[in-house]
Length: 226
Image (tube, rainbow, N blue to C red; front, side, top):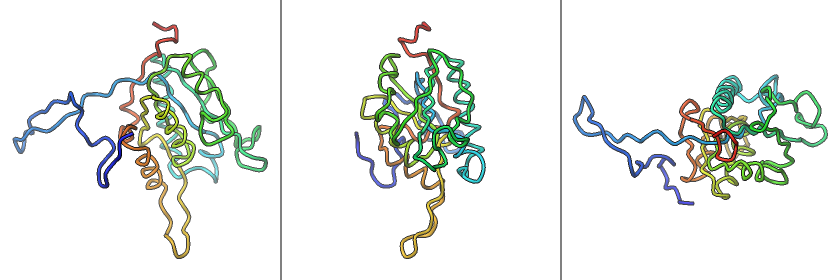
């Protein structure tokens, strides 16, 4: 993984095959980056009732649900693998299994290209069949969305990178809670800032400044869809 330098965006560099176009006002050429290639899997992390509805919802819940709804719909349409990760919280937690808060918010369309995987840890790969599911489908690139940015989203994306996948984390399709103030240490850290830092910490190998609407999908090569 390459190292980022302070003040730089993970995706600030111009792609090797980028071209330039004239600026109508100033004359100099402006770099333009080609559209990124599609991903063949969408990993929806912990979009469960406890985190997007009611008093425990993340501040950006409405936007998150809108973006993840769109991503899921387009992934299905284009034949990509859709994986819903469902966190199993401990007894008494808001996402304790088989409680209302544990339920997935998005309806699932079970089939060979859409699966639900329960997970006991932040990392969606840890002690789950996720790695095998992606391998069996021949997945090469994943988009990761959901909650919480600095915990399960980051942990799952980081392991995907370590396993050699191209990883896209759309900046407007993951969310978290505000970090409470710590007397003598810091004021409240807004959730949007936490999400940005969590994505930035993945390093320059992850694509973290793309919008959800810019993510495109294709069927994985072993899905039997062509």
